[in-house]
Each structure stands twice: as structure tokens, then as C-alpha cells.
Image (cartoon, rainbow, N blue to C red):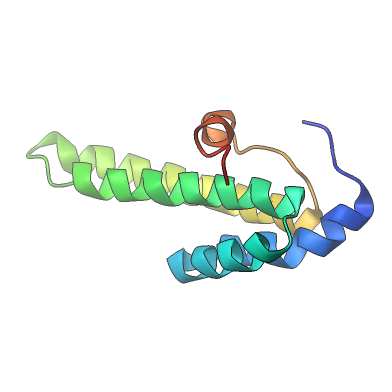
Length: 112
């Protein structure tokens, strides 16, 4: 993905970082970005929402007998890696989707 203009990044960087800090941070970032839409912040809100929903789905799968625990451990490790990559992209001002599922998150949550 191409990087947006620098002033757009600086305006939305704080909101983008807040989006990765728990579900409360995601809600706060969504509300803050609703007033004055920033493309950079919206991108990272979509990525964070996707990661959090994926982690929620993994937690539900963990209740499956036998295989659920194995899938949950792998899913949580994958989710934490994606979360770290997402927050590092936000801190560094990169508008880069997280690997494997980031493009899909952008498509699914395009309305945000």
C-alpha cells in the first residue's frame, strides 16, 4: 500500500496507536476518528478491529475438545504477533496491512 501524506499520518498517529490498546482503546479511537475522519487512523482501526475479532474467535474455538487447545495456542501466538506488527506500523507511521489477514480486514471493514 502507498503511504499517505506526512501531515495526514501525524494527525492520525495517536488515534492509530490508541486503536491497538485493548477493546476500550479501539472504541475510543473509533469515537475520536468519527469527528474528523483520518485515513491513516481509519486504516489502523480496521486492522485492530480485525485482530481483536480474530482473537475473540480463537478464544471460542479453544472450547472445542481435544484440538481446541492446540488451535487456541497457535491462534493466540499468531494474534499477538499481528498485534505487535500492527502497533509498530502505527508508531512508525506505516500504512501497511498485517501479514496474511490484513488485506481481508481492510475489505471487510471498509465502511469504518
